[in-house]
Length: 435
Image 1 (cartoon, one colour):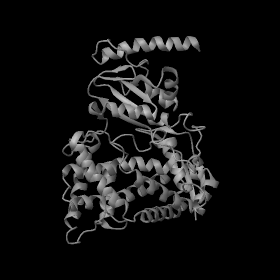
Image 2 (cartoon, helix red, strand yellow):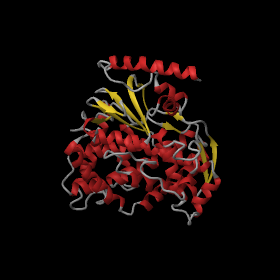
Image 3 (cartoon, one colour):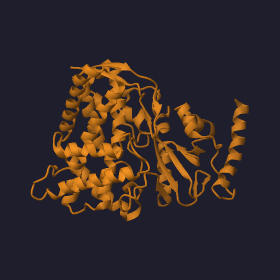
Image 4 (cartoon, one colour):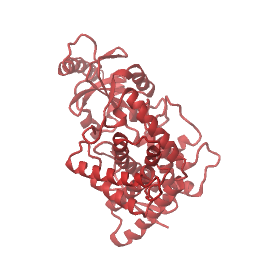
């Protein structure tokens, strides 16, 4: 073991010099330790690979991600301090959507532009979240689950069928929240079809002609409904996110483009979240029964909320990605301008000093305790954090309640897999639901 660690440190010094040359910098200050091993490959083979690397090299280390020398930081307090100390020179790594609408994604904006657009969005989200739609989310999920239960009697319990049902629930809820399209309306059906055209096989990181055509069609349909808000002639709910922004006179091309792509990104993330929830409740009859019966009145939070927090901790909150626009010094290490930085949320949320038995799925850990922001940050760390955290909790807990009103049988499962962007349940995941 000692010899291996010595070799690792030697490789780290060599790799630091190599990384500096790759980044066009002279080696005059100490770079984070670590060779240029592909962390993408290592992580696919072992989900704990980055945590093990942090144990060996320390909480700030280097590796190769997507072919670039990248600095990784582990520990929520450390990650938050990195963001706070270097706010002015950090750029968010996200989709480049400037080819579809002006300024691109809000999360990638900086300065007053970011603050202005985020203010508009946050205010509208609060209105939509208080719209009493939580019960509507649950009813929508229940209707789709009943449809699924009836349909599978004819085509069997295929994994693809279960995944498709959850995808339908996801898109239906999001177009209701963002665009006020109620299930069963022609507006709702048209938007669902439009988003299927935008990303029929999942989120497309580099939008091309097909995405542009679908995007422009979605924008036209939403704007047509916005025009009907004044006289009530349209099908858009006046309290949805888009309507709230439009009625304030703040719906420009950039905001509309962001709303469309927030739904598109949210479809991917929320679909995975519902798959994780269904996997865990179907494999734990006691948990399913507690949620169905409303047990746990003496706890700090109901069992479905504890379940969702544990899913976010164990599987859904993975990383934040930034790029430094100027040289940075952090914890005695030099990070050259242009370097990507991964803030390791999954590894931080599996710190045994914070969470007992961190690699075991235990929703009860949240039943009576509320971790601090230094221990648990499922929706981000800084002013770029997701403004839809409360909404996500309402959607997830409503889905869990609807699902647990059925008798569930886990028919097929397998080890988690590294998907295109995140860790996902096995493609084999299939669940039987009965009234």
